[in-house]
Image (tube, rainbow, N blue to C red; front, side, top):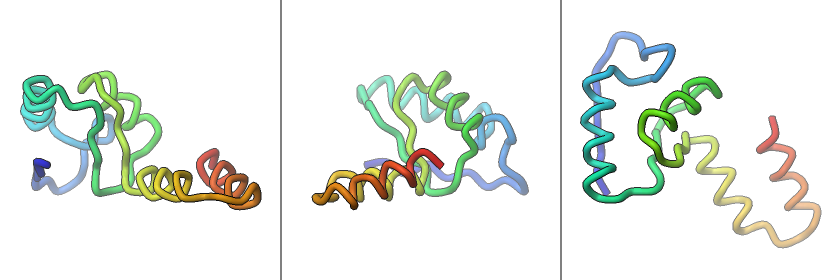
Length: 89
């Protein structure tokens, strides 16, 4: 597990991170052959898409990570439906 931190007044509206930090993260992902990167913040759908294109791996923000955990643990059909509904929003 590696944590990258960037201090900015405002996140980049297109990619959340600056280009230099994205290059650093991409280099780490490529050398370690990582398939998923997790962002400890909320990302917009456009930011998720843009980051996935740049880093070439699956991107999860805080909300998607929590929903993925709930989806894995959901056992009843009602719980599974509720998770699917939350993921579609």
